[in-house]
Length: 456
Image (tube, rainbow, N blue to C red; front, top):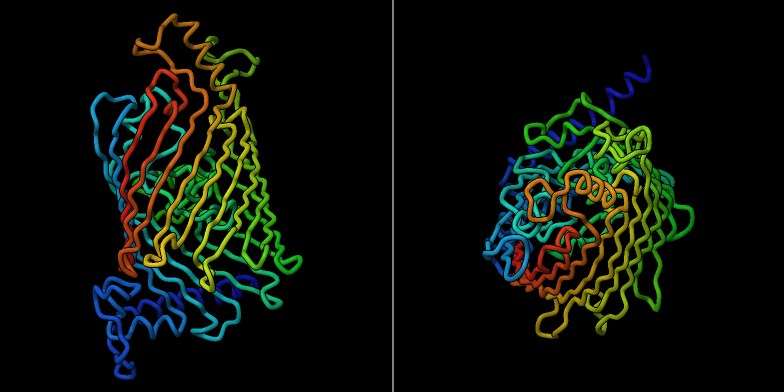
């Protein structure tokens, strides 16, 4: 019975932290707060659009409670090419509300943190107009779109460190992409945004989807750490009506990632390098073969089932320059590559390189200029499956039942982010998509995009 009591105690602490934080949010006035330096609503210098609520918000932040109220909206217009002949414009957005709580500051719990986040996504994607609808997609020109129009619990976790932070354990509801193969999201095209394995492997869930899981991280040397995780794979959580589903009914397996992370400075400029591997235990179908090894598209048998799949990634980010004493300005280079299980994953490999320059002009020290190019290569099994299906049917590309043969897709983005205020940024961007969804019969496309981000 002792372990059960311990779990109840831990759960009680989590609920207490969450409850007290909610009460703090509701108590929007305090006589002890000095409002002389408070940021007013819509102040261009404030980090929040609504200001710091007469000093209350800053006081919470100082005590360890960081309130997160955010918005991202992305528009895409098909200027040329693509599957459709007209020039549609599509809009999608995400609202988020939550809090990051430093429990060491708030309650004196050393190296302990708690996070909760709720997200809401809406809108349409231009990819439906860009790609042949008979082909599986290989990316998105609006990274914020995906996983349906729904409200979801995206984070509910607690982390605890020991031995001066050398060991850190994180448990709760989260996305594996929050810790593994992690990259910044500074583009509108998803090929340059966030953790890439989750974009191509349907047993890895990126945010806003969350899973029950845990991550153990250990610092081997200064700047070098290793981590391992385990995450529940539950396809039912992808359904729009299950955004707050907390039980594990529908579980199909477990995702098991491992990663080494090396953080270092070169010429006093920061860099981060990641090498990782994953395996998952959820059963997934082969892209081509049935149980006899023949083409399932011809034999009409079920596709062979695989009990495991795997893949690995390598990521490097290095700041190359700075501007005077301002370390936040300068040029950074990011490169990454992922290699998925080609027997079960439509996109077998992915490679990208991107450059970001923060503060290109002295008069605009927080603006950002960015450029990236990426390539997604379709697995051979998917091409063989399409060839077999078309050989069997005798159909050509113009026929409705034809299965498009997919090859590789190349995407590029050039953007300029305008930091209009401390709480609002606008990022016009131009994107180029060569062979949308890897289908060579679809014309190469040019897309004009506009991203708006705000912190309330």
